[in-house]
Figure 1 (cartoon, rainbow, N blue to C red):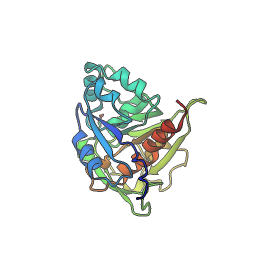
Figure 2: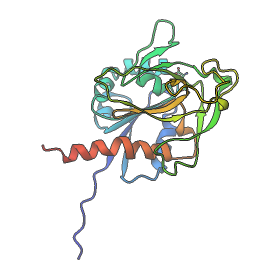
Figure 3: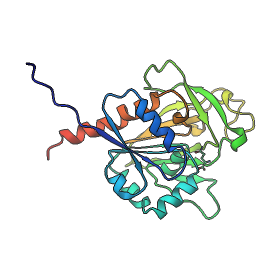
Amino acid sequence: MQPSSPTPANVTIGILALQGAFAEHQVMLQKASLKRRVVIVLVRQQEDLDKCDALIIPGGESTTIALLARLAGLLEPMREFLKTKPVWGTCAGAILLSRWVEGAKKGGQELLGGISVTIERNGFGSQVESFEAPLEVEGLRESNRPFHGVFIRAPVVIGLNPSPTDPPIQIISRISPSLLPASQTVVPLDEDDTDPRDPRTIVALRQGLHLLTTFHPELTKDDRFHEYFVRECVLPTITSRSSSPA
Ligand code: GLN
């Protein structure tokens, strides 16, 4: 009889489930082709978060999510969580994950601040200016096949402001300005190639453990972004934790 190799431990991924497209992320993670078995936890209180190896913050309405997270006593626990564990923010989740926001609701809004960028809420326009566009994404499985980007009242990254001690920011996708709706006012449409230092066409980036996308991969039928998050952001932290001395 062959000796059986040890079964790799499950990975537990939390999805913040207070408001927005959390159910869509859940469906996508359930059907994604992943190398490890993933246990999904819908996070509504700190006990849920405590079980997780990683967290996804969905799209929705960032001010509402922040308010509900404050009421659930989750803001501080999530700020602690992201110091050691990967977090992926999509759209409203990307706003929450940013360190600074422009166009915040009157009276301000609370952020988690895991990624040192400035983001402009609704920067690509209002609900009626929502749009879809093919995206090239570095590191995605079959990366020469474009990923269908769904942008709904999407935020725009307007500044990369890492401090010297922050991990570097890695840009993994930019949108071509020619694919943006004419009504949006943030990115100049007459420039085919924006200045490479210009952040406004960035739609997906990584910093340290974290991933930020200004669009909604969970609203497509394409599991490649969920697979990417697990493979690139989550599994390396699990492996390094299980191999570090006790
Ligand atoms: N504009 C929304 C906000 O400020 C985000 C929209 C979305 O997640 N689709 O939270």
